[in-house]
Each structure stands twice: as structure tokens, then as C-alpha cells.
Length: 268
Image: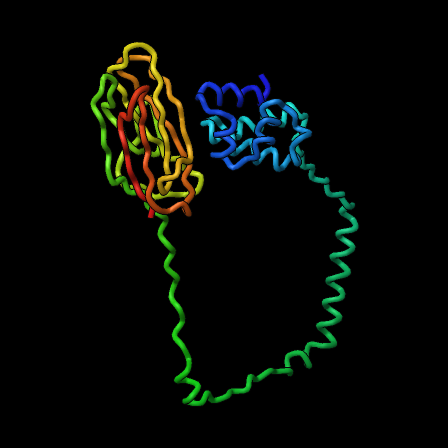
């Protein structure tokens, strides 16, 4: 399966239109269509193409590095191999001649210039610093304090009891064995560190789908469609939040008919 076909199938599986993906990722609709159709010549260049693939794969919840690696393999882009040139070995006899020559030269210079060299002395001139100048001398600055990274603060979590309802919902930095890792309410935001929204849904009768809709300052920026295939099902979505996107965030967890949960947090 080619890179474009994989990205298209994942997008359609999450019920996201290509127009909505273009709007969310800020990538031109023409470029997204070219990527999914494998028309690489219609893109501005390999460097820009890799950037678009990284953004699009991250948006769809895929491994961006693996997507770019598969693209390079399809395009036949070779790996760069560095060669280190071997140093030429000079005959050891040349090194012996050079050492003898340097030793003789040092002896000759030491014989003719030894006495003048030691007689020459440099005495630094002492200058008195005026009292006015002494008063203007500033103290040495201490170490500058490093700015603290932004912090994410969960402000509220609401759940709504319906036929299908949310048993658990939390914000965390990772998932292991389908469970959140160290869920909490306050996190430090670092570059390229994804934030996860973990959800445990109960009461589903038959296969269902829910959506995690991420909002920044009441503006929808990402929608993730998640499958629920059992009466008690754990699932999650993730979003990489840059440290400069400070302000209020919230996530709406929507069921087939209505909202199931609502979680709010701030980055400051």
C-alpha cells in the first residue's frame, strides 16, 4: 500500500472529509489531493512534501517518521553515507629526520638568543583607578533565571449519563496497556510532546463510534473519530500542543446522538 492510499484510508475511516482536513492542517486542498493520489510531481519539492506528510500524519494519529520513511523508499531517495578518507602513512624515517632537524634548530636558537631573551623583561605599568571610577563599577551579574515552561491546568470535567455513558475521562501524557499513564490536572508543556485524552465508555450495544473534538479558544482545530466495539471500551485521542498556544482549551466527547462528556483545561 502506498503512502497516499494509506493516508486516504485512515482519513476516510475517521469520517473526516478532505476539505475539513485541509482546513484543520492549513495544507492546501490541492496538495492534500495530490498526496493521497500519489502525484508527487504536483507538490513544490521533496523538502516541502516531507513537511506536509509530517503534519498530515500527525493530524491523522499516525507515526510521521514511518510515513516519511515509506515515502523516501517509494521515491528511491538514497541514504547519505559518509566516508572518512584514510590518512596517508609517511615513512617513519621521514619523521626521524624531521625530529632531528627541529632539535638542532632549537639548540642553535637557544645558544644565540638565550641571554637577550632572559634579559628582556616586561613590567606592566600600574595605574591608579580614580575614586570616581571605582564608584561606577557595577557588581557582576549573577546567573539568569531560566523561564519556566508553560503548564497545562485541567479546570473541569463533566460527564452526561445516557444509554452509552463515559465511566472515566482524563488528561495524561501517555497510554500503556490501554490505561492512562499518570493522569492528572497539571502538566508542564514541552515541544513535540503529545497530550492524550483517555476515555472509558460503557453501555454501548453493538459497534458504535464517538468523536473527540478539540477546541482552542472556542475554535475547533481537530476531530478524531474513535470506534467503540464493546459494552466497556477504552479509547483515546492525542494532540501535540505547542508551548506558544496558551489560553483556554476544551474537548467535547460526542456520542452518536449527543454529548457524553466535556473536559476543559488551560495552558499558561
